[in-house]
Length: 594
Image 1 (cartoon, rainbow, N blue to C red):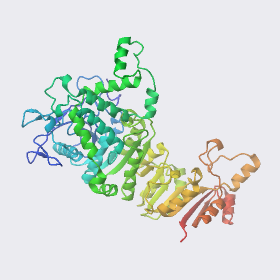
Image 2 (cartoon, one colour; image 1 turned 135 degrees about the horizontal axis):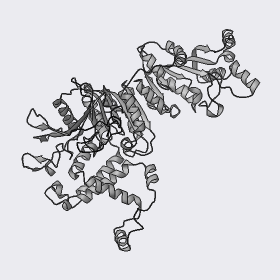
Image 3 (cartoon, one colour; image 1 turned 90 degrees about the vertical axis):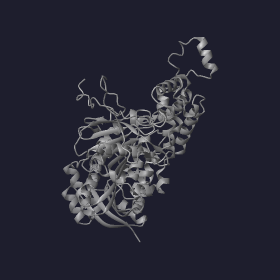
Image 4 (tube, one colour; image 1 turned 135 degrees about the vertical axis):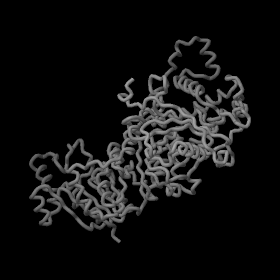
C-alpha cells in the first residue's frame, strides 16, 4: 500500500499510560477516588518539540482511541474517522499532531468497570465509582501533561465527544485555541434522555447482569440480552427516518423466503417479523456485544445524561461567557439526538457574549451518525476551520465592496446579511472592525470559515433569530434585499439588530434597463444583472423610488445616498439629480426616525 497516495497516516502504535497521581489517588468530582488510572491513547501526524500543534479528538459514546491509521500487521487503515484525519484531509496530519484517548469508564484500555481494582485483584464491576464528564476531561488533561502538552491548537468532538468539548472549553477556557462541536449540545434533550434510560433499564433488568458483578461468569451468563436491546434502541436514534425508509422501508429479510417453515413458526412465536429492519438491528446488536461492556455503557451514558452546562454555570450565556476558543458548531439534518436548535442555542449565546463563533447546518439527510458516515461536506467545513487563510478578493469584488468599506467606521461591530464568502468582513477586520455574517449557501459558508470570519447558517427570511437585538453598530445588506422573500420585514428587522444599516440595491428603473426593454423586449443580462430571467436569485424587481417609498412607510430615514452607474450617460443623469433614471446601483445609509 502506498499510504501517501491513499492519504492515510500509516502505522499507529497504541499506548497505555498510567497517570502520575500527586495525591496517590485520582479524585472524582462526586467524592469517589481511583487508586490508579490507565489511559489508552493513540497519536499520529506532525510532532513538534513545542507541542503547539496538537488537536485532541474526543470520541463518541462507544468509540475508542483509534481515530485513524492502521495497526502493524493490518493491510488497510481501520480508524473510525479516516475520512477526516490524515495528510491533506480536514484535520491535516502534515500540519497537526492528532491525539485521541479512550474515555474514563470505557472498555478499550482506559480504566473502567472491567479493569482490575488494585485493592481486590478483581474487576471493579459494581464497585467502580460514579464519574462525571468533568472527570473524563480531567483524565484527558492529565494524559496530555504526561506527554508534554499544556495547550491545544484544536479540540474536536461529535455527539458525546461534543459534550466533552463543551465541558473542556468552559471549565478550562485558556487551554484551547479552536474547538469544534458536531451534532452535539450543552446537554441531552428529554428525548435523548428517554432513550438512554430505556437502554439502561434493559441492561439492569437482565437477570444476567448480577448487579454489575458478572466478570467471573461464563460468556452466556452475562447481560448480553440487555446490552443488545440497549444497542438496538440507541442505533435507531443514530439514523434518520429518511435513511431508514430508503434503506429498509418494509423490505423482507434477505433470507426470509429460504427459511424453512419450522424456523418461521418459532420466529413468529417470539413475535418476530419478516422485515429487514429487524434483521439489521439484530446484526448491529451482535456486532456490539463483541466489542463493548455493559457496565461501561451504564457508566458512560449515566455521566452523559447528568451533564448540563447551563445548570453548572447558571445559564447558557454564563457558560458561553467563559469560552475563549474560536468555536465551530455543526448540526445535522434528521438528527434525533441533538437537534439543530441545540446548536443554534449555543451559537446565539456566543453571539450575545461577543464570542467568536461559526455555525453551519448540514442537510445530509442521514441523521446523527452522518458525522461518521457522510463526511464530505463536514470535511470541507472543518478543513477550512483548521487551515484559515486570507483568501484574495477578486478585483471586481474589491471595486464593489470599496464604497461599503469606506462607510464603516473603524472599530465598528458589523452584521453582514447575505455575506457570501465573507469578503467584506475580511476587509473590515483589517481596519479593526469585527463582524458576523449570515449566509445560507454552504460553499460560501465554507469560504467564510476559511477567511476566519464569524459566519452563520441562517435564513434571513426566517427572522434572524440567532442574532441579539442592538448588538451591532451597523448592518450591511449588500444586493440581498431583492433576493429574499420578505424584504419589508427584513428591512425593519435589521434595524432591531443594529443602530444603522447600509443597504445596496440594484435599480431596475435605470436608463440602461429601460432602453434594453424598449428596443429588445427582453430582460437584460449584464454586469449588474448577470442572470437569465429563469435562473436569477432576484425575486423582487423594484426601483430606487420604490425603496424610498417603503422606507418612508416604515418610518426609516435615508441618511445618505450614493448612486453608481457604469455608463457616462447614467453618471450625468445622477449629477443632474435623476438618480432613479441614471443609477445602476444605489447605496443607502439608513436609521430609524426617532
